[in-house]
Amino acid sequence: MAIKSVSGRFAAFATLLAALFITGCVTTTDSRFSREADRQKAVESYVQLATAYLGQGNVERARHHLDRALELAPENPSALAVLGLIHNSNGEIELAERSFKQAISNDPEYTRARVYYGAFLYSQGQLEESRDQFRAASRDTDYDDRGSVFYNLGMTQERLGELDEAIISYRRAAELTRGDARSLLSLSRTMVNSGDMAGAARYYDRLLLVMQRNERLQHSPESLLTGIRISRYLGDNNQESSMVLQLRNKYPESVEYQQYKALISNDK
Image 1 (cartoon, rainbow, N blue to C red):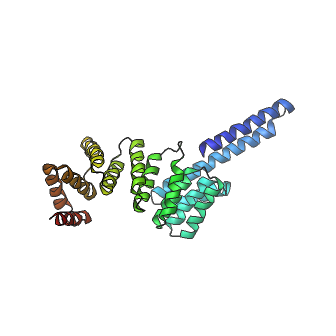
Image 2: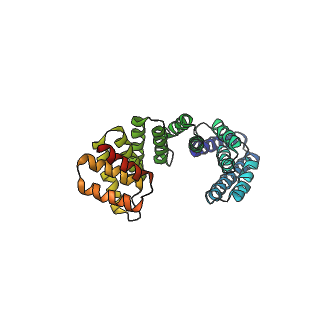
Image 3: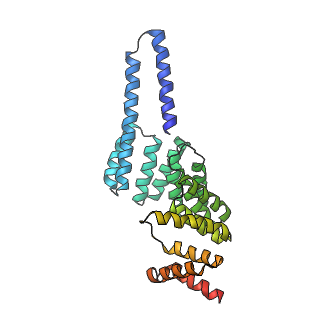
């Protein structure tokens, strides 16, 4: 969206320069251009404020600033996309979907609207539609958070049972985020579930290295169960025992611990 709008402003500016050389009069046109630039800047500022307040959970303040943006530019796709988020937070599902669709219709290349809409569809259980939105968003090489887009795409594909496709998406997410722990874990887990234990072990080792370098990262039930399954495949009894102990002591009520008990029961 930023590239598109900026290029549009430069095109308008070139037109104004041509008019200057022909007529020698620039006062009215230049003022009109300045007013338009100021209006766009104001809209962007209001949308940013609305997004920030929404992130803090202050829906009322978010709506106040967004209304100012929509007064200036009712068809602005970024404002409409945030309006969809606000409607969704208020439980107004139909209005939220309408806003997301209108934002995309007004500018099909505005990737953030597709990301918001994809997340909305995922929350509504419309997984195929969600996957399609994330897939379209992933094609935008200029989007500033492509790693998250590919992660969301992988998560949706995994839910749909498309494990091979999910592995590709998770791997791309891990590459773009330079080894984000969340992406490495999801990639390892999905590879385990697909039967590629050797591949899963390689990425799980990278995950353990990331965790060693960052003391704030702690094992979750999911990461422990994934590690246990990989350790059993590799015959690494020491690592398996260590992870089983952590899973039993820290997360005895977790679904993953129940899955572990089922795993060893089946082996017997």
